[in-house]
Image (tube, rainbow, N blue to C red):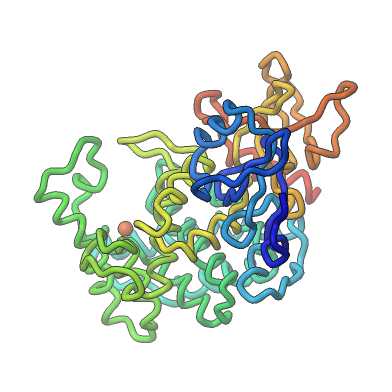
Length: 409
Ligand SMILES: [Fe+2]
C-alpha cells in the first residue's frame, strides 16, 4: 500500500506487542500489507490492544504527531528543540529523594499552620517550589519518578507536593520560564489549602458524602484563594492553579464550571496532575490504580474533561511505564520499574523481585534496559502487563528510594 510522502514523516510501523495506550493507530497491517482502519483511533485502553491481537493483527502503523511514540521526545515536541539534561538521572535522583522527603515535611508544616488558623510562611512555600524547579530543570525525570512514592498517613501533604512536581514538569515541557515555574509550583503546593477549612470528618469520610457535605467540599478552591489573598507577593498564576484545579475542559468541573480556553493553561495542567496523583494513590474509599490505568483513564477523557494538548504533554512526560510501575515480564518474572529509558520506553530497567515461578527473591537484581538482556536462547524479556503492587505486598516507593541509594553509593 502506498503511503503519501507527507504522511510518511510522522508514521511508522510498530509490532502489535509494542502497541501502547496513548498511540494513534492509522493503519492495521495484515499479511497482505496495510489496511486502512475505518476510524483512525487513539488507543485508550489495554482492551483495545487485546481486541487488535484477537483479530490476528500483527502490526500497526502509528501517527507519532497525533499520539504517543514508543520513543518519547517530551519537551522537544513543543518547539522541536530537544534539550539534553544537565545532570543524568541517577545523579539527580539522589538530590531529588531529599527534595521530595523534605518537601513533604515543609508542606505538612504549612498546611498544619493553616488548619490552626495562623499565617503560613510564604518563604517556605517559595523555597520548596524553587527546589522542585531547579531539580526538574537539571533533569526532568528524577523528581517526577518519585511521585510514585505514596504516604497514606500523610496523603494531603504528599499529594500537594506530587501535584506541584507534576505541574512544574508539564509546564517546563511547555517552555515556561523558570520564574513562572516557581509561581506555578507554589500553586501546586497550595492547591488544596482550602481543604484546611473543610472539617476533617468530611475530608476523611469513608462513605459517600451527602449533598451538603459535597457542596462544602466543592468550595475548597475558593477557600484556598481566600486563604492566600492577604499574603503579599502571591502571583495571579499561583491563584489560578488553586482556583481552577477542579475545572474541566468540557465545563463540567467546579467551582465555576468554566470551559475550554476560558480556563487558564495552568488550570488545565493542574487538573490532570491532581487527578493522576489522586488516582494512583490509595484512599480510605478506594484502592490505588496502576500508573497505566490512570494514564488510560486520563487519555480516554482527552478533549472531554481534559485538554488534548495537555494530555499529550502529560502522557509523553510520564512515558508508558513510569518509574514505580509494578510489571510482569513475558518470562514470568515480576518487578518494579526503577529507571525509564527515553530512547526505549517499552524497555525500562526493572528491579526483579519475583522469579519465573512467582517466588519472592531474597536478593532482587536489576535488569537494565529489558530488550538488551539476554535470556534463555530465543527468549525476549518484554513487559507483558502491569499489576497492582499492593496485591503482592510491594511498596514501590521503598524500592525507588533504595535504588537511588544503591546508585549513589
Ligand atoms: Fe482539590
